[in-house]
Amino acid sequence: MNALLLLPLLVASATAERPDVFAVIVGNNASDGGELADLSFADDDAARYFELFSLTGGRVEILSVLDADTQLLHPQVASKARAPRRDELERALDTTFDAIRQARSAGRRTAFYFIYVGHGSVGADGEGQMHLLGGRFSRSDLFQRVVSRSPATVNHLIIDACNAYLMVARRGVDTSDEVALSRFLAREDLSAFPNTGVLVSTSEAAEVHEWSRFAAGIFSHEVRSALIGASDVDADGRATYDEVRAFIAAANARIENPRARLEIYAAAPRLNLREPIFDRAWVTSAITLQVPSKLSGRYYVEDGRGVRYADFHSSSEFDLTLTLVPRDLYFLRGEAFEMRIPAAVMRTVDAATLSQEPLTLAARGSESATFQRHLFALPFGPSYFEGYRASIASDAPSSRAFAVVDREGLSGRQIAGISVAGAGVASLFASLVLELSTSALRTDFERAVGSDADIDDLEDQVEDRALARDVLLGAGVGLLVTGATLVFWPN
Image (cartoon, rainbow, N blue to C red):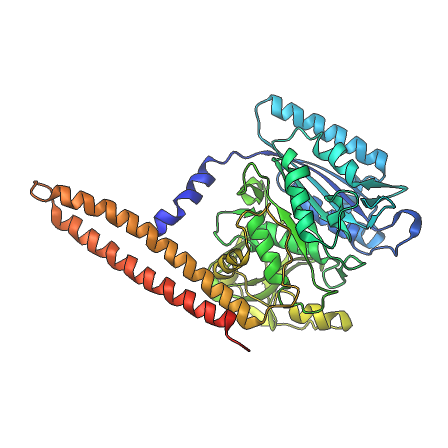
């Protein structure tokens, strides 16, 4: 049964062509005209995106003014960074697109990333704008100067800014109406670029949410955590748009304050809804950290410099594998203990073999009251993923905008019910697959009766599969009933 269910994933992984990766990353703390208070960590986010995508061995451009602290942490990135001005951005796009065309002419598949972290605002004409040094880059610029000009096989847009949803919305659109936004995206703009996927923060709050304990924007930190493997519920090494958005949903599900609640919009390229936003098979040199299911829990990974690399809440349902930027030392920290990762001498590390030491760090400050307690409070695994997908009205990720948590808030019991119901759906699907295979085997058995064939073995196989089908069917129905009861039973 497991082999039958995993066959499509195995085939896709075996046949996928490794693309040449290209990225233009913009991180800008300042606002154009000084109308907004400077951000603190857009440069840090840009530097960490640069390090991550550089693992692919691809061509990566970074436009950001790294502050003194960030330059000390990322001296190699600082030596390659250029100012985030419009002329520098145009030059980076031109040279990148030229390189992509050369790769395409050589017959290679290409993946292009445009990543922006910084301030976003709304112009007088109602159009979204990204802030650069000495100017702005509008929604029209994004589509005309980036998306429509890109010669890549597939494009990925990642935008982390307040009002980021206006970067993919038309002028004058009712930005409070997510349905109108999704219809516009699907019918008028992204439909013209079916090779383009979008992942943006869509918080309606007036500020971008940064957190000093991450030294990063919360959205970008969660995206990177998802890309390096924390969202990989099927363990195929690929982070899809479905997996990333479900991972971010789980990470933020317990945030009740609407002003602190992170919302995102995710749309996979319509040419291939299973297109990975990142595939760890593309990585040429990295450290692999394995977190087995028996160590399930809430963790974060921090390197020896104190840079917080990823956060996650692993499930007991599956083993987690993370891809880390090469460093001499990492720490895996839980809520009560930490494990020292000797990355300088081990390229693959199994956390189960590491000794656990008491955790001496403590959360401080009012911002920790919300984020420290509630971010990544729910475990993320196959059951949550299936339950989350089942809770979405449409299975196609490009069909609608969505919030990572219902606006009225879901209780922990209801979230658990959705997860249980999702497991029930998976069991019913598995029973259907077994029924089809049992029917085919039963036909073979009937044909073999009266022949010289060994019918005893065929009969045993038919009975075994029928029994497994009945067990899965019963479990599926039971899980669905239990899940529905948890979701709809009055408080």
